[in-house]
Length: 341
Image (tube, rainbow, N blue to C red):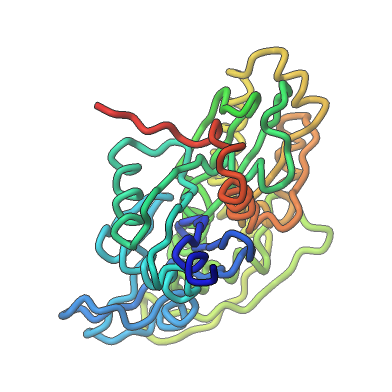
């Protein structure tokens, strides 16, 4: 029996731009690491991935390349993404003898070509049967919403590459908006801000650390000042400068405005009965972006709707995808249908 179970490992994957999370049927979430790969430029052999590769980011020499195979929620580098999926599955020991069924969460706005790339990658990594689920649907299931009910629920899932906004009812997405403005874009905005306003070049990791530490969507009760190290663009030497949370909020504002506008557009297209449900139940925020200080308050102010940050928003998608793999038959209606041409 033991060896049979080993053959029949069902896994769920949240293949995110920033992080990859894996859930094994019967075990729960077993992996949560950055979607970053370090490989040898000449042989394309993977040297490190996840946290180890992240430590190398921005510090590699000319023989090593550190890359993120996922961009805007979809596969940008097919070969490296496949190697990353295979290595992660092997690490959690689920795919030593091929995985039987795999459910992968993808952005709701993915094209047919992008879906095919995800399916192929999972199959090449050893999966026998691959199913896809839209991220906002997975997030809704992950935070305990009854997606089957005749009630409207609104989910805003802010990841690394995409922000997914969806109104869900009767096991389906009634309307959705998927924009490629999310955590990465916010990091980029911070990097550009330092370049323009302080003549300093900072790396992606530094920008992300600044966003997490002092980034906010509304004024803070007590504004914070931090010291930031980077390279002076004029002199070319290392330099430290001080910035306040007010400046960082200004740098992030454009991205936040675009997310709020997308929320408004989704609400405008929502049927009135479902709008009434959303007014009663409020909007749920999931994904790493939900942790930005005051974002829930900002959306509340702009839409006049109750906004709630879900518990453990970072793992909402993988927990939902995991529930689906645990009860695949019950949740078959929420999976993305295969289109045959």
